[in-house]
Length: 257
Ligand code: UDP
Image (cartoon, rainbow, N blue to C red; front, side, top):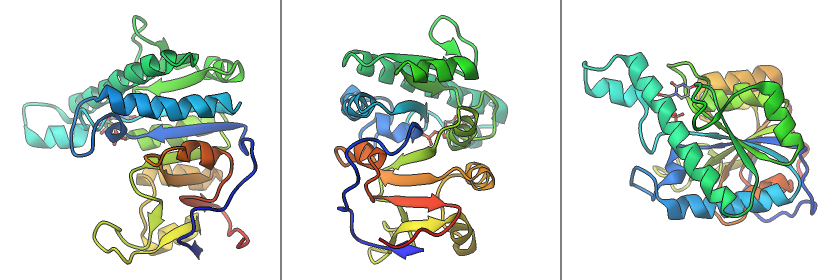
């Protein structure tokens, strides 16, 4: 594994990936510490995505819904709601985010499609793998909503499963921190960020990259994950150009640069 504080190494000018799956958590849709949707946050996200789409990479996005509702938390508040119902509510929250992102992107003339894992033809296409791939090939950004369509998992798992289905080269996990750290950087300011780490090292050190199911799916199928801070302007584009920022999680160790 390689620890680093260097964010600046340049990559090539064009995308180094052909097709990517970008996971954006619900907190990206609201201001820090708030909930709900802030269209100014969504618009700045859309601006970054516009530039990525223009680079020619095929881009599918899985939206989270935690800015509105997370099933597990919500069902713990009250016995009046069945856990499964709460999780379905969480999935619907992701559809709300997807629609907001779609409009923000279309306002920037980015062609998009929303595909939902829960059928709701009035607002979104159903998720159909081959159709999703066709949209991507035509240069449309496909926003994947409603997670997997099944309760009790998170949109991290949806991202990992969809990445495999659509044969994405990588899962990009946009977060509010700079990558994977030796310890929680908010608790220990001396925590070290890894520029690169293997799946095995993540497990042996008990580090957190994505939720466990998502992580194991990527590990089992050799799908690399890049964890990076999407809040820093231009970072999504930089990751797609292969710049060494954030943390790359891969099956085998990479040679140190
Ligand atoms: N969810 C679900 N099945 C899925 C994806 C999501 O039941 O396949 C529910 C789950 O309750 C989750 C909520 O939708 O908490 C919102 O998704 P998530 O927590 O992953 O959003 P994020 O943390 O990324 O904002």
